[in-house]
Structure formats: C-alpha cells, structure tokens
Length: 344
Image 1: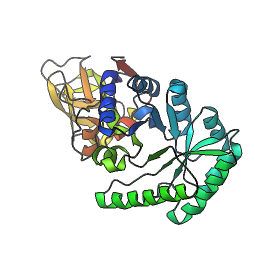
Image 2 (image 1 turned 90 degrees about the horizontal axis):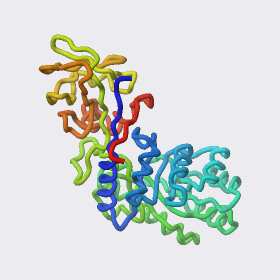
Image 3 (image 1 turned 90 degrees about the vertical axis):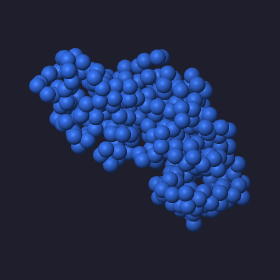
C-alpha cells in the first residue's frame, strides 16, 4: 500500500494537556474506542499516560482489556457496552470498571463477579442510548445497594450520556441526572465519581463536568462538525499517499475508497501537495485522482487530511464536506494502512 497515517504523538500529548487544563478540577477520561479513533491504541495510551491521564474510556471490552494491559495500575479503565457473561468475566479479570444501564445486566455482573465488581450505574437522561428509565431508577439503585451490601458489586460511579443538541435540552438532562444522584444517595450508595458530559458540553459548560469528563475526538484534534476551532488543539494525524502516476493535468495517488477514503469526497475538497492545495477530483476503489501541479513526479506526497501544513483540510473539514462528523474519515480508514509514529 502506498499510503500511511502519520500520528504526531507530541501533538497528541499537547492536545490532551489542553483538554486537561480546560476541564480542571474535573478529571479527563480519555476515550479510546475504535483503536483510539484509528490512531492505534497502544501508542496513544502510552502517550496519554505520559501526560498524567488516569482514566480511559472504551466502548467495548476487548478494547478495554487492551488498554488495561498498557496502563497496568497507573489508570482506571471504564467500558460501557452491555456484554455477556464470558466478556464480563474477562473484563473483571482485567480490572475493568463496567457501565451498567440495565437491571438484568447488573444481576449478570453480580452473578459472575468473584469479588465486588466496580460498576457505574447509568440513568437515561433523555438520549435513550441505554440507561435505566427515571421511573425505574429508585428500585434499581435500591437493588444495587443490596448487592453492594452483599459484597457482589461496588458502585464506583453514576453516569449518563446527553444529546448535546441544545443548551435547553441538556439542562433538562442535567436536572434528571442530579435527581438520580440524590436518589442513589438516599438508597445508601456513595459513588466515588459522577460523569455526565462528553467533549462538547465538557468543553463549553463547566457545570456539566462533575468529577470526570469523557472526551474522545478533541484529544485527537478533531473538532465538532460545525463547531469552532479549539484553543490549543490541532489534528494529531495526517493521511498521506504517494503519487503513482502523472498525467497531463492530474496525478493518481495510492489510496482509495477500499482503504476508507469516502468516494463522495471527489470534487468537494482540496488536498495538500508539494505545491499547496489542489482539488481532489475523484476517488476510485484503489486510487484517487488529484489536480496536478508544476513538476509533479512519481513518489511525491499528497496529504488527504491533516493539520493543514500542505494545504489540506482537517478530518473534520472532510466530514463536513459530506455531511458527517469529523471523526468518520479517521474511523473509516482500513487497519491495513500502516500507522507511523513521530515524536515519541
């Protein structure tokens, strides 16, 4: 393959530090789902540990277990996908803390756990992305308190997702969350941490930060689609491909739709070249066609997305060009594209 994703680990660390500074005194839970947003899990986790990250969030158990293998005792790892008993056992053996938004799931964890399992109870605050409904919450936390007293679970946290669609809707969600926390306290629970916000609300609204804020995209330099640039944050990764053929007015580069470059980007963005920005004219299955420049030669490098130093747009710019979120151009990339790491 004539392409690679270049990850600047110094830039990544600078992004993480900027997020930590913004969130204080709340702690950052760095989200590393989907192989750390396509950047490569292990190098990313190592870099985050180097700047003091002590919480990591993983959607699924295999990612959480991989993360814990890197962190050891230096950080806590949280996974929120509801899974079966085999994966519960694997997660608990690795010291993973589990997000629980379902009464039956809580019972399965209590049944499997050889020792008190660290769980974070999830209230549905209106997004309907898992979570116990408010009307069922009082019975749920009473049952959790009984299981904690029996030594089957340890309620380490209470959490939720919010829509981040409008301030007014998020305010309603926050009020529901506070009510749920009060009910948990009334049931005799004393969670160590509360976490409600993800990237956007955590960045913009201090009252949503509580103890921990789950941040993914911003740590990697991916801003929200339609959102402003963020102080101290820039893309940590660049997708680079080399010229394989030079024509009269265009060149062909060695990356295409089968590698994860959206075919709908053709004619909608500029890419970076040795001569600056040039139009991406078409995306084929295994190659892209780019407008040429004087002196273009086989082996020249073209940047599909990155920090903008060669005239290219960011991953978010690409996402906006095809009406999707900024992380999608990263998450679509084939794992067969080599990841190259700079500034370890």
